[in-house]
Length: 102
Image (cartoon, rainbow, N blue to C red; front, side, top):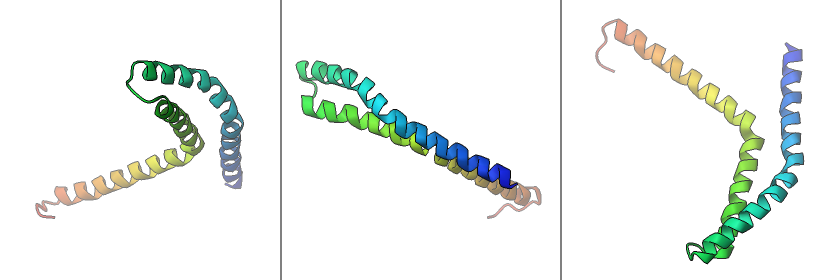
C-alpha cells in the first residue's frame, strides 16, 4: 500500500519537474512562431502587435499551467465521474421501486 502511495508521489513530482525544466525550451521554440503570427496580424490590421504578442505568450503560459496541473485535473475528473455514477445508481434505485416523485 505504501509503495503505491510513494510511487504515485514520485511520479507526480517527476512530471512537474519535467514541465518546469521544459518550460524555457517551450518558450524559446514558441517565440518565433508568436512573433510571426503577431507581425502577420498587425500587417493585416486585425490586431495590434503588442496585443497579439501578449495573446501568444498567454496561450503558451496556459499550456504550461495545464501540463503542470494535468495529474490534479485528471484526478478531479475521475472523482466527478465516480460521484455522477453513484448519484445515478441512487436515482436508478429509487426509480426501480416505483417512486415517481423526487
